Image (cartoon, rainbow, N blue to C red; front, side, top):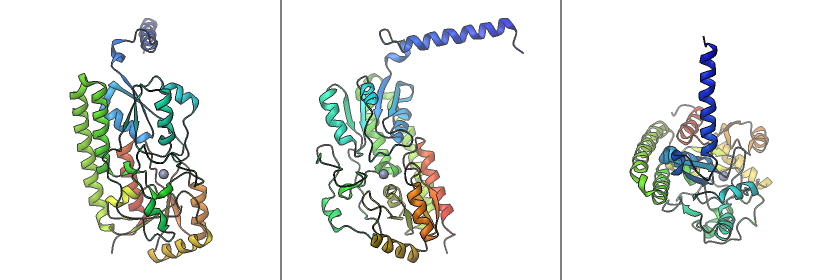
Length: 328
Ligand SMILES: [Zn+2]
């Protein structure tokens, strides 16, 4: 039981801690602990995981796309733009809204360092299958996404998503994520070279975990190789490719399917014996429910953007495994 003196001394400690915390935030004379801290903005929540795993308590990372936001249609709020003026680094990853954002950053915040963390990440090779609504044009227009390409992006699709057939969901492959993590580490090291060794040690630990997670997923998913996975929004191609699985999406380059596209899809699902339609819990649920009710499928969420990145990879695998009957 606490005595009165005890309580008051505990409160005293709390008040002192609060005052310290308030001082740390007051800017002019940052506390020693926060002087080195890097303020990092990123596009999507999985990047917060990478930045904080590698940066430890030297990095404070904030994702522009928050809970419930759709990265394909997202625009940063004026408040976020104001906060970015205070940031040390912006870690890009190649999602659509970055094209317009990076133009703004270049003109408004020329001192904010932008690091393209998708650099060196190879694009997917395999096409989604069986692709009942294949757009012959999509392949031809599939340009590697970089910041200098066509700023006219997003004019042609209601969701602005997956225009020109490019798949921006590169982070869901744990082996490509190693390249992303390396890029994040290099960015932090160049911003705070005095902490390079610490960042490198944190990176090494993360790379080991990425490898271990990948090995475990590969072992568990191997018996199901070549199966089709039916999804509403095609966010999982990088993950599925890695494990020899095929993504079949309802959505056609960011829009709902036409009647004939849907008919083709239903046929493909019937042929594949599909039982589950996976949806992105952030924005696909009612669309997925409608399709699933027509096809008599179960629906199940797969979150491509969860902030607990490694645990989420396992949740994706768990959901897929639950959706399949045992291999014959
Ligand atoms: Zn997406």
